[in-house]
Amino acid sequence: MDSRLPAHLEVAGLIRSVEAAGGFATVLSKGERDAGTIMIVVPENGGNSRVYERMPQLDGTRQWHCSYREDPEKKQEFLDYLNRRGRQDPDLWIVELDIAQGERFIGLEMNSG
Figure 1 (cartoon, rainbow, N blue to C red):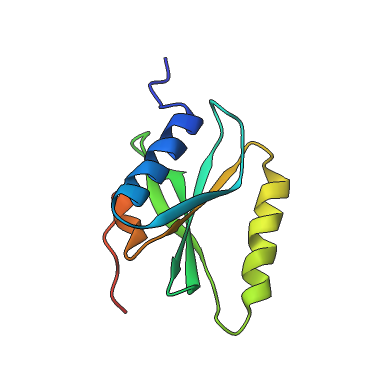
Figure 2 (figure 1 turned 45 degrees about the vertical axis):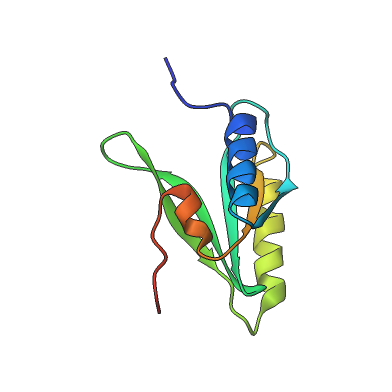
């Protein structure tokens, strides 16, 4: 039996947590309500965005992993990546967390540098 929290509840919780901390979060793409995959976009000062997705681990758990970083000189490539991922997986939720050190809301520490 899968003990995973339904996607819509996890997304709602993320949004509430970010807003309670003084930030802004928005759903860029709404996926499948219960079993959809969640992808998190974390911008830094309006750019230099990073994308996080959960990846399966050898022990059967799923951990957040940075799957894509925006090149400030190629902003369109970042948008193309998000659009492509959305087309590849119609169940995918894409959520942007617009707050300093947004990674902390998915249990990651912000890397400096």
